[in-house]
Length: 619
Picture (tube, rainbow, N blue to C red):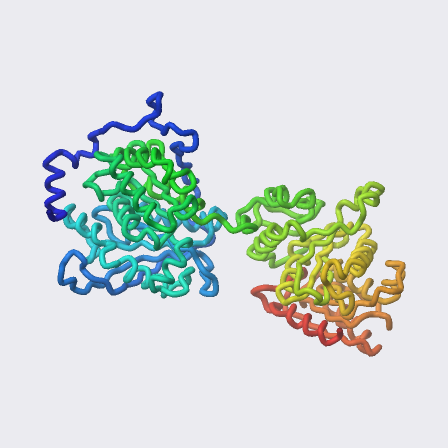
């Protein structure tokens, strides 16, 4: 019997009436839940209202075409099919992305996923990735239809039934997408696709959900995750999930049992439907029957979700995707902060213990902003929110080893202000020289998030071991001396070279670096003669004028429009050092203001590379 004949028979016998109810498996109390404590129906969480608007960090949707066939015909004439591919914000060919395939429903086309509800699905994906709800993912909206146009019911049912046939999905669609975009598939032959299955999901809505069950049946090994939304498996019969749920569930269990991936963690089905969905019982009866087969389907590999009041429409679809993606592809450890993360949430993150408050200035009168992208620091310019986010995520990813106390507990008990000190260690290569970075703040506060953390992070990327000092503004020199002493005495333990180090600073931090870079002051403030002098001092925007033959080689940069630190004062000092035979290098950036930090995106960008070269030349 052809699929059209089957459909006609179903319609004649009343099976097309999706409001017709059949007996629902219930618990002993008739509550419509399973009779085990391990399974339960899970209600979805609504999509936040703001997620329907455009996010700050927007991905893009691109259209591709690929060669396929008309698999409904024996002669299989060639067809050219479209697919729409969502690429996340900051898509980078040098990294690998998880990929999700989402199939539309009856009368839909490949455009539907990203065009319905005014493009809501794209906006929601943008927000989810921006907020760190899930990893950045690639999402593909394909079609089963050879012509990408609405068809009558019978023809559409024929096409979904053969979407997997001769492996259109495997041989046509996946290679077209994953050879063109950067996913975890090292190759797009069968071996490469199967090897990358943990990083792939397939889902669909309505007839797209039925398609998902065909993929489950015929291509179980090509992806780990399945997202059938408002639809059932038709292997046993059309609408079999509703009319013969136990037989349907037994068949699906046999697919799992025949697969080498049929273990607790080898796959996961995230089955979903709205409570007011016209296809409710097709989904519900099948899900309940599956949940009775606890020797195969467990809470580790199967979950059933309902949307309260949800109907058979894309409002339910976007909510299901919003709830499922963080489960399939959760954010990477340490990558939980985004531009819109609250600063207070960062400081209070449990991973940071009692030192989270030191990430931002202890004196709150010198900074403002509720979120990371809103951060403002007094006297500073060009604060880069993306760098702020990167730093916060770096600190969280390395929370177990990134913070070092420079004072003992006894010393902190004697002087509680010493609790407001410490070193943040941005680790480079073992045995590489170290740098101590000191932020400015006019000796009133410590602007580390813009004036020392970014520098230390970039230095660590270049292989150097870098420390950002949080100091007491009124005892800045004392704290820097203690930090140098601490690093020198613990060099072996920290894995850093004790010689050839450098001192970096901006504004007040530059003055600190210059003072402790002087050999006489170093010995006086540390009380030690065994600690070598810094091989180089790197200064930004500080009008320090003292000159001594005991000063270290000095690199300095400043903006010509700096109303706090005159570029001429810095230039004259370096000329004085040079006259004493001390190596120097000076840069003045035309029109630049005070406190430009790394200078990313400005005329000063790249100064850090010059400074590193200067340091290396004088080690």
